[in-house]
Image 1 (cartoon, helix red, strand yellow):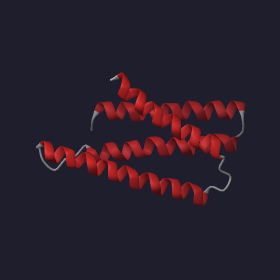
Image 2: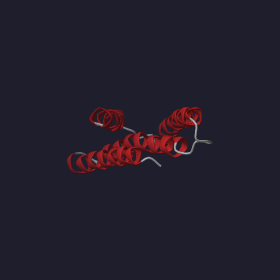
Image 3: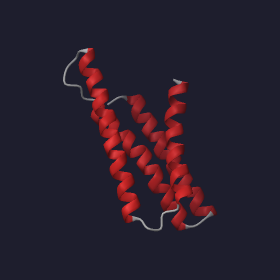
Length: 116
């Protein structure tokens, strides 16, 4: 698996953990859990992409491109499933904390791409 992708996923997990800890100290448990769920969706889908796209079925550029497309499809499906499951099963969800942490993990991804 690509080290850069793993580093980005680790940074996303770190941002999630930091946000959750801040909310535990400054707010309440429900806010922290909502934040953890949003951030987890952010970095778990990145990990799903990394796992799926890192194993092309050959050595040609076409095989590598197909692996990237497959990784993006897998990431999209994983995102839909995780969002659906969260909205269906966690009734106390606080949307601002949930979406802000999710967006923060996406910003980590784009910031890492800009700095590379």
